Length: 177
Image (cartoon, rainbow, N blue to C red; front, side):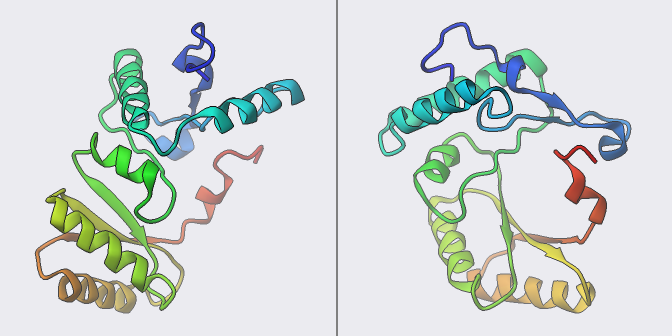
């Protein structure tokens, strides 16, 4: 929105996450745009989104300005940006601003090609990465060990691996519940 309206402030798009989720710290959430307002605002958001050049080099500077504004306003310890799955234009622009890539992966056959592609690409770019086996609900110990072995065998270098066990309460983030 700030590309098309110079009065736009980062704080207009940031929501505090309840303490039940953040513990003694604080977590702030910033969706891609103000899509929760009126129908007119939603139409304006979608129109603006369609005018952003997601293929050009300008995308790198868009993220740079946004990250700088977030750092100025909030001085966060960490900024996590959720990008589209796989190696794509948005991810490519974000890589240039990243100190670490956290790759959330599945351990099923469908996810293997994408995990290998991203892992090999990041290895070539020499960017630190950790792989996270995300949202497993059962037998997490065996699956986590298998995932660790798969990542280390596939990429041939020492990389951190973690897993997210299923936390049902997290499904409520961003909902009225």
